Image 1 (cartoon, rainbow, N blue to C red):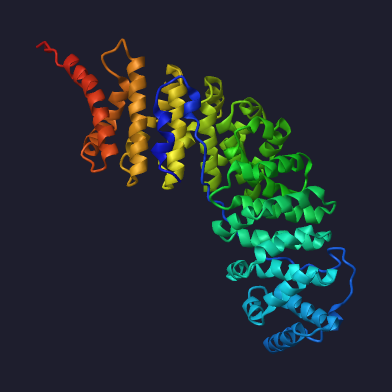
Image 2: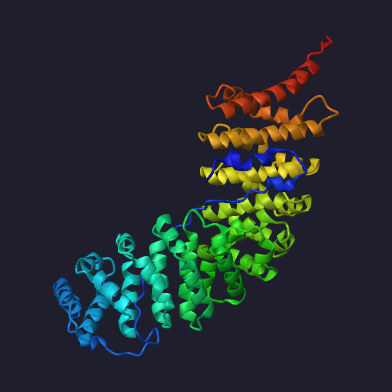
Length: 503
């Protein structure tokens, strides 16, 4: 995450420009995993079955049989006879799908890549082209193989396969490109520069095969997840296509892939009103309430980014019972969803007093105050953001409600946290609350918020932090003491009048 106060310092300024309070979540580290390629039979891809496993005399159940199969593969690959090449592909298919991660390097050592290149460049029979692309899809999913494929020039070779009319071969090529691209930014960028996104998207748009569509969407979504996220110009067309698919798609796995991509697009998009719709919002709200974290987490992120970029959909999102959904997640034990929900809630609150009243009515604030003491730094920071944004938007009555929940005590405790980020955000929160107190207690010599801060030893802690070796912390603490000491001294003066005792 970027340094918090470079991104969010405007949230503490008391202005009427509420858009300044909006925070756009960035650089969210999505866990990228290479999925083991499921076994693909020729029947599964609707290719005419020209051979069966009976053509292969090995069951490959033992290590000895597997070693013998590797020897046969070496011999068959060099053969000019189609039948022997066919036997080689059967054995390779068995080794790759049944013993994933075990024989890939051995196969590469047999000069398999040179034979695959030869088949692809010669545009051999459809069956061999399919098998070659299938091998690349499986090889690319094994650890350490992507770099070998890139070094051997397979990115442009795979992209050229999209010129063929055979969709299952293009499907395998898309899968292989995704497996290579999610290994690192460098490989992803090579694919993008070679128009890899465009050819996969074109296949996705034109295919009539739902399985090919599903795999192309997975491939595009995987490439769009790699950190740092691609510029919007690269994902714009993908996002528009995904939006159209998402509106009517009931395939949960496909929707999961689409949501992550839409979330990234919403973060980058300068024209979010044209990329989103009430139908999409309603579906995202439903998925955000799912029990599956594979669905609810990206949905929360997507909705959070919509709210952070525009006010156009906030009222509709809230009308989908979204506050109750956020409250449920905030009270849960799954930290990623807790953090996302707090982030989104803080942006909802800052839009209007009306939205704050809805949140206050949900009775979630006591739990948010307890989360401001969380041992998880990210959650603690987001919880404090919700609280301080709430105070910034509140009437005197609502601030009193929040303060009565022991907010000042919670912030004082946060000052003793080992994290400098927590200390700084707590100090700035306290400064904002004291400033608000000055405006509310204009007819009184005592700012009651300062009295509460002193009661829970907050001022004493701030005095110590004024000597902190981190300049931003010490200067913020000094500013609070300058501000509060005046009121404190005035309070002491008012209590120093001579007292008359009667005997």
